[in-house]
Structures are given as C-alpha cells and as structure tokens.
Image: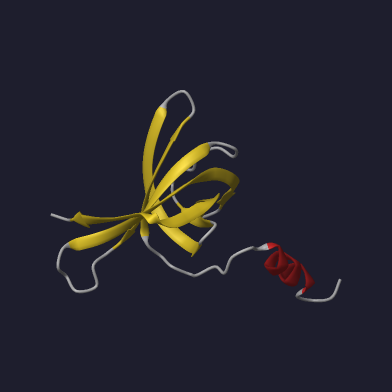
Length: 116
C-alpha cells in the first residue's frame, strides 16, 4: 500500500468537512442509569464530533451532546449547539480517552446562555 492511501480512503468516507475545534462539551446518555459528563471536542463536523473525556460512553449508545462556544467579547453570553446521535467508536490510549458521535448539528438546536 502506498503512503497516504489509508488517509485518503478515510477522507473519502467522511461526508462532512471536519474542523479542529477544542471547545467544552457536556454530554448525556442513559443505559438504564442517567449519565452526565464533560470533555472537549477534538474535531467537529455537521454530522458529528470526536470528544476527549476521562469518561466515555459505550459504543452504540444514543447520546446528546452540547458544545459550548464561549463569548468572544466577554459579554457573558455563550452559545450552545446540540447534537443527538450515537456513539460509533471509543478510543482508550495511554494519556487520553475519546469517543466519536455520529449525528447532526442543526441551527434550530442553537441556544444562547447567560453565564454567571
């Protein structure tokens, strides 16, 4: 296999452009017990995100994530955009844990929050 072929194949499978954004995220899931955890996005696309966290939900579980976009002008109003999806992959390596959510971010799931 020539160098870069695996990367090209992976890029061809992606339906949306990914952006390397490191933003706070709150995520929730239930597998008989309700869970709420936090982490940071590693990359984000319209069809999902990869999230770094010390606690990862199991593969296959339905999940809601809320990405927090801090106010750029310090006016204490932050934006939050939600995505409902499914966990498709979990990665546990030395030094970090991450999971991938497949779902759609949509404009009608954008809210403004007054932070304290």
